[in-house]
Length: 188
View 1 (tube, helix red, strand yellow):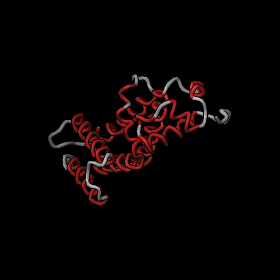
View 2 (cartoon, helix red, strand yellow):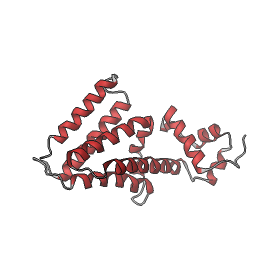
View 3 (cartoon, rainbow, N blue to C red):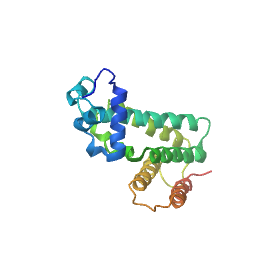
View 4 (cartoon, one colour):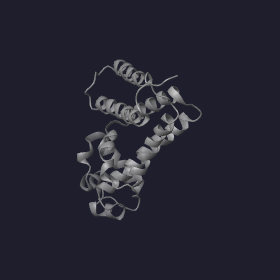
């Protein structure tokens, strides 16, 4: 086994992300992490209590990065332009992360004060701030926010899982039509 003196939380997280990216979350265990890091699994306990703590850290960084991308790109824009930007940024980011997008299914496992839950909340609150000042034809703002984020995330997850057309140009066109459908609810 290798030496643990160069082991860090960052190295463990990077290795965990690689395992998830190649094999999926079910294959992420302390045993698989230890093997990939060439250490004894007991050494991981110096950094994390369990695999859920590793996933929480990965999720926290995942959502924090998404929030920062969105906050930077959406500054100074509003209305339909901001909504399209939010959707496009979320879609591109999730698409670029491959199987890590499955983190969305894990956030409910953590308490409200978890950094993972807090960062996810920041991403959702950013959408609330964007929709706060838009006037809608029929929907309430709360219903619109929930439907919008569910559709954007749902489409992207189905796309990554391979349930949608395999032709990239068609997927992008379909996604833009989905966003257009929601933007059609916004009054000018």
